[in-house]
Image (cartoon, rainbow, N blue to C red; front, side, top):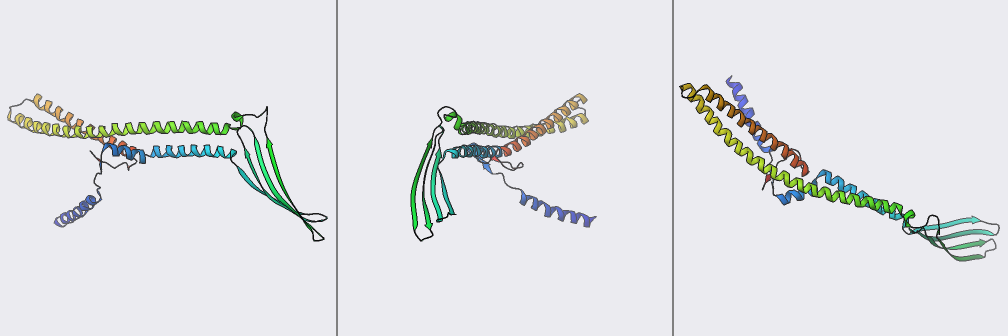
Length: 257
């Protein structure tokens, strides 16, 4: 038995320092820092920011349909008189009113069998505008309008989510402080009730207190323990919620200032 006791003592002595070394101190945090940390690390807000960025990219993607395009052009072939090569560039752009404009330029070269070469430069300008059907920005710019509206909605939802998150952080911050003070008060009440319970039991054994007095103190002791347990459970739940709001691990607690 003595050897077993020694072995148990050694095991506990080695285990407790390890547990103490793994325990992390609570980082200090004031209210402005808590709000800033939540706005930066909250997981739901980060996802909303990515969705907002995606909506912004959708607007840019819709606007690309009306950007300037530069397309190379070239061809080569053989005729009865010789070889023919053509190459050039075409710049084109569509507008929200339905207008299509393009400017192209190129050089064509014909190599005759007798050794003579013929070069020709050309410029081509094309403009088209529908007058009745498919006319106006409401038809051709519908994609931009829809993407811009979706972006505005996403931005409003994101800003509202930020405001709600800040309010929730403030409420949870103050709730944790209140619960910690409540737990301290409940512990003091429990200590006084335990002293009263021991005193009443002693008085009952001496005949200076009735059984009713002892039962009444037993009830008070049970209520004090229940209040403390409820406060501790509420604090644990609020601590987990606060850590989630700040994007921290669920078991992380903070020294709130």
